[in-house]
Image 1 (tube, helix red, strand yellow):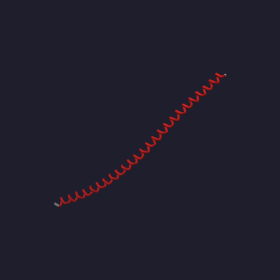
Image 2 (cartoon, rainbow, N blue to C red):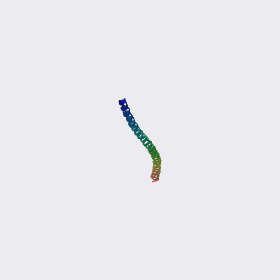
Image 3 (cartoon, one colour):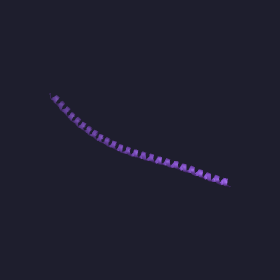
Image 4 (cartoon, rainbow, N blue to C red):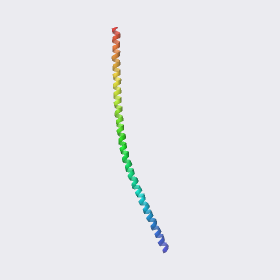
Length: 93
């Protein structure tokens, strides 16, 4: 009977250690979940910044394309005017 008692005491100690270990594991799990939530918030914030930069680059690209188009049209028109002036001088000579 005394052997049973020692075994039960030993098992009780083991269970207490296991409970303490489980509390430690749960504490670490809660900490990791908190860090994960924080990282997700950081990721969302960075994603918003990247989206903003992407939109800004798109706006600049569109503005540059419009400006280049206008420059090509102006250069073509200037060339036509200069050719017409040269042709009229040639015909006038």
